[in-house]
Length: 250
Ligand SMILES: [Zn+2]
Ligand SMILES: [Zn+2]
Image (cartoon, rainbow, N blue to C red; front, side):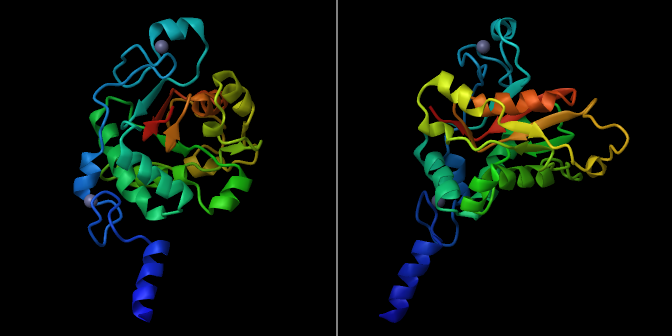
């Protein structure tokens, strides 16, 4: 009886069954991971109408607005139940090991795309308050895997503290109106003045000249968070700013 109870408790605390097929010993088995509905085309992240090769901002949006983000690559369809469940378990049930399989589909997508090879990877920062609550930054876990595995022989620098989240914002998914979402994240990121530029071998030149930057987040809603972060990163004059997310949640 006691061991039965122990098993139940352990499974509640540390689910060891695949979220898709309940097979033992893997949180998301390769077959179920493969079954997640990937997007077969990409759209402009602003209007979400024009089809663009790698999720580039379309020409008409570019003419109307001044955006710093060059493109947003979306891996899969957030309406896919398994994907939504896996992201929920990662973020709200704190199942950190889901970052490994989930990052695999991001890496595959990046390899199939024609994105510039990133020179550095920046996970979307969390406010310290939220970081304390969750105990980890889910975007950082995904970014870490991408940084170490995207290129077979080279680790891409993962830069965690170049930009700080300075203002605590309400989670975007809790805000319904687009304008309010934009307002919510405005000015919420700031370049860290104490950043150690040695980290990316730039001790004399404190900018990102000639470097391709990749921003990583788990999900994007309106894209407002990524656009705002890109605007701040753009101040350091990188060659390009791309972003990747697992899905878009509307
Ligand atoms: Zn499975
Ligand atoms: Zn557009």
